View 1 (cartoon, rainbow, N blue to C red):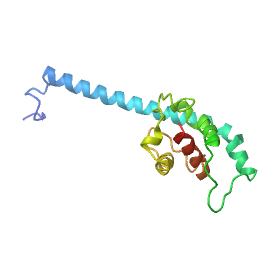
View 2 (cartoon, one colour):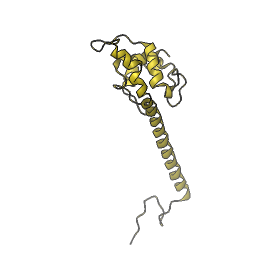
View 3 (cartoon, rainbow, N blue to C red):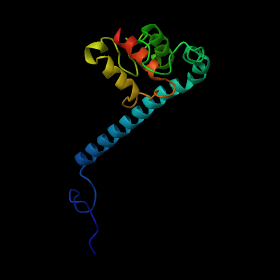
View 4 (cartoon, helix red, strand yellow):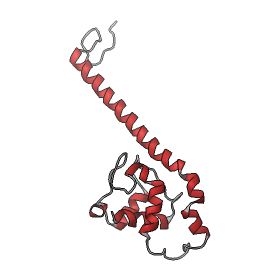
Length: 154
């Protein structure tokens, strides 16, 4: 009876030392990437979850409930000052207090040279992990436009 062994394994089934070392390094690298990715995703989503209760009574909800924003027709012009408030509540834990320090997320300084406003809005609406998706809740269309206007001003 012949024992099963992969094509690259010598008879007897054990790996040569150098091949074993390569496999261990690759496995270690994959585990490190998986742990870091999980930590980043948990960190960003944790910060946005943690601020959810603050948002329920914060300026986003208050402004909408006081009729300061139009819900029908064309949205009002983007407000970078309001975008800065939203940014500090939802984005600063990863991108830094004013968006230019970076950290878990990249610095957004000079983002206007990389993305125009429509591209920034599209990115905020449909980000790539580990950035959390905050649209359509807790951010609405106007909030996204305001944050994009703030980020474009950095």
